[in-house]
Image 1 (cartoon, rainbow over the protein chains, first blue to last red):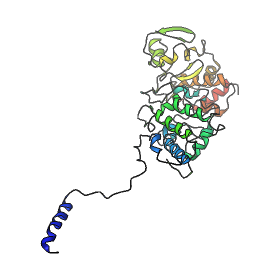
Image 2: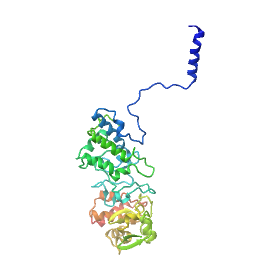
Image 3: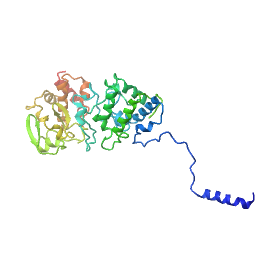
Image 4: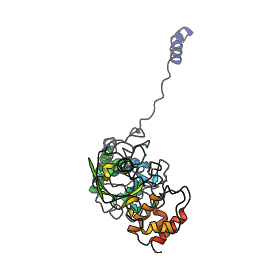
Length: 214
Length: 149
């Protein structure tokens, strides 16, 4: 091949080098990771053919809410609620009391109202209280929380249908998406979480492995 | 008009649903024994009873109190001789006194449900009532004295 014959190829190569870079082809992920404040819908997991694995994946997605500070701060294993994204001890210092609603003289309802008190930055919802120790989520893995949710001895005697109803309709659960002040809400919405939990139950309510992280 | 009973007296007040109970008590009803401290339920100076339970009046909206019984420091005892008030005087608990109405109302709510509290009960119950003079040890002693322990 002569130099003259190579000239068009060289010109083409030069033009390619001077143009915008072409991205290298990459493998397409099975599902696209959602934004931090969003939840994937159940349909996003339809590509997982194995029913149990799909159920596990649905729970892991739901656990992005269940392990969020807006949720776990009132699900401690000890007697002290937490506050903030760093799970700081509740200030003023309060204790759980026999029914998770504080003690005489300093109950949850001493300060918390049925809705957020915006000027004072105090969160509020009807019946504000701590979850029982058997439902401790703070520091727990999605796998551990899943086992809890399915066990009536730990979940307040609820069936899975009642768990789904609680997630979909409970007023304190709803607060997680309307936390007031400058608190970051839980990902997605209560309705989206309810859809995920219903889909998890409908696919057999399989629990993820301990290695599964949200 | 919102109806509420304060210290056994029925009142009707014309105010917004979200007006803090503290403003209703102090500004509309003239009951200034309940103090404004922080306005964020962090100090306990504004503690009153709502149906016998301690609440922070500064963050309790009128709509929550409407139709219910409110007791303030003025109503703890018409003669000022509630066991806690007697113990407070006998032990000289107050220093500046600003927080003491709230301390007394919280302590009264405690004794109403736990007549013989332990020191832990007292400490936990009063943990949200701050005293800048640091009279905490005398407060605890007076609660124990009032409880007869």
